[in-house]
Every structure is written in C-alpha cells, then in structure tokens.
Amino acid sequence: MGPPVGGRQIARQGGGLSIDTPPWIDSVVDWQRPYVGDDDRVRLAISLARENVLRATGGPFGAAVFQAATGRLIAVGVNSVVRLQQSALHGEMLALMLAQRRLNSFTLGAHGGPGHELVSSCDPCAMCLGALLWSGVRRVVASASRDDAMDLGFDEGPVFPESYRYLEERGIEIVRGVLREEARAVLDLYRSRGGQIYGG
Image 1 (cartoon, rainbow, N blue to C red):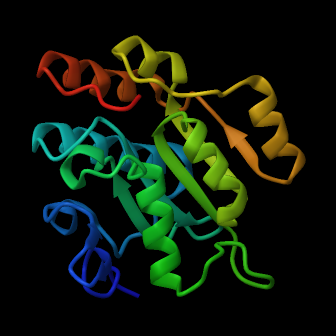
Image 2 (spheres, one colour):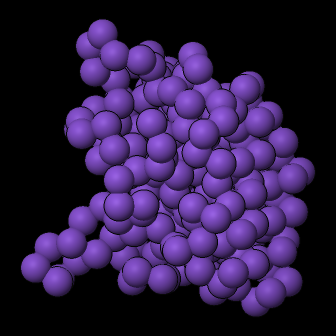
Image 3 (tube, rainbow, N blue to C red):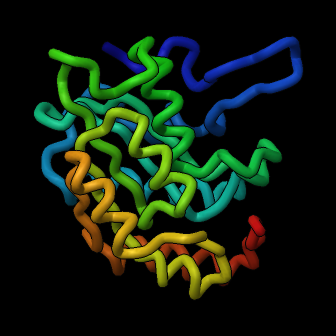
C-alpha cells in the first residue's frame, strides 16, 4: 500500500476546517520501505521535526505510526499548531488522525488486526498522552524528553510518572529517550532560528 489516499489531507468540512500535513511530506518520506527497529523509526520522526523547522512549517516535533511487527509506515505527522491555527494539532495527534483515516478505523488496535505503535521525536504532552489511551496503539517510543521541550519554553501540561504508569497498566508499552541527543538538537535548531513558542 502506498501513501495515504489524497496524499496528506484528513478532512474538509464545508470549507470550514482543513487538516493536512505540509506539502513537502511526500517528497521526504519513503512510504515503501520497512522501518526496522526503534532507532530507524525514531530517526524518521526526528527528520520530520527537523524538516518542519527548516521549512518553517511548524514546531520542532514529528511523529509516525507504524505497524509494529513489520515496520510498515502507516502515517506521519508534524506539529501544525501555528500553520493551521489549531491548538490540538501536535505531531502525534496528526499522525494518529491520519493513521486512523488511512485504515478507516477509529482504533489502531482492532481485534485481530496488526498492532501499531506511535514514534515521536519528543515525549508526548498531556494532551497527546491522553489521546494514546483511546488511539489503540500498543506501544509508544519517544526521543527528546519533556524537560527538553520545557527548557525551550513549551508547556507540556500535567504529565507525571503516574501518567505513564496509567498507560502501562492498560497495556501500552512506553520507551523513552531513544536518540535523545539527536532530537534535542532539533529543539536547539528551532531556538536558534527564533521559532515561536505557542500554547498556554
């Protein structure tokens, strides 16, 4: 299966709401190859975050949804809060929305279906952690830390050790800190370019 039908768009409702990824996504994402292992998958999320900064299309965060066992790429997302003027459009949220749209399912954990995982260039904020619970993913892999994002000035919301325990108790595996320095370099790049700190 190739990239999502229509390339990148989720929804258009009466001209009032349009949610999509930036037009450069399909030129930098290899939809055909499998992504093997955490490092390979995290590097894709980091590269999405970096391109989002370099192309000035959003914040320094990227995410992707994969079929866990095969490494098949299902969807990607980049932070689009400022670009689309929507506070909910963090990279993880966009990746989850596009994955569900592509699979035509409100859950990425359908009974009998392949397991899916979300990979992010940074620890999810409070909103994205909440979305994980209902998304159906069974595993989350993150790179830069919550503290790294907060050092830049982003408000990550009420995320506590108990937040992660809650998800783990419900069967979601959490892996953090994979290639953290590479992801933190993207946050530093955003700072050096005078990127907007939004939220709150």
